[in-house]
Image (cartoon, rainbow, N blue to C red; front, side):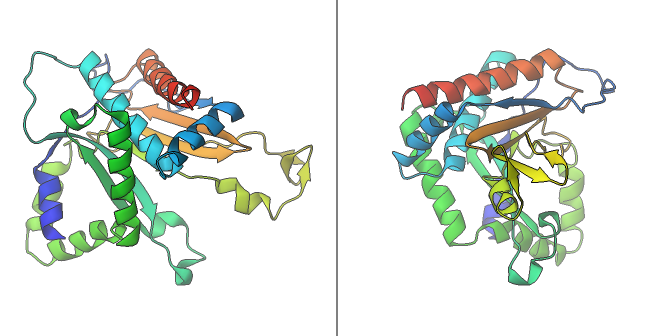
Length: 268
């Protein structure tokens, strides 16, 4: 457990950056949130692509984000710089660790993190990459590896000064290239207990037409993505740190991600 944590801390996570280099983010009433929805047909194509390798939908999304991270970094970073041996692209996955006794608590009160890391050289073959992500995620769930993050913090707290030093060193360091929150069919359990009108969930005198949300950004990680299944469609929300990404940069990144997904869907 501790060895895994130290290996993670030694690695250099490649950060994604855009065209903005200012220190103060511009004011924005919508937090720079960009949202897009795939069609039901495209979503079914993505399901078929994942099913072909006995992978989950989120495994497929992770693979596409790794390809996106490598493409963006190659297109928008200094290509003359040599790649270091310990450099990786990393997708951070917050996950709920609630048990039966935590039923009344929101997920943010009992949460861990999983980190899927790949060096650039491992992000070439789509099939091999999906299989490796699938196997790693299956191991994570079977071994309850989501607790490693929490347990590692507990161990480090017992060593005087170590956790404080790590916090200082990692305060502005990139600890993940992209943060992904895949919420699955979140509205299924909610919608089952509420009436429907014209196929849409009704809450009082309101009809739920769309749902969106996004996780927080942390210093050093400039891109956060949220995905959700709603009425048979994949909803994607993306936000970038406006200190490094312009609105055009964010739109370009989201469009490229959607293009990756559409190509995968069309091939199935």
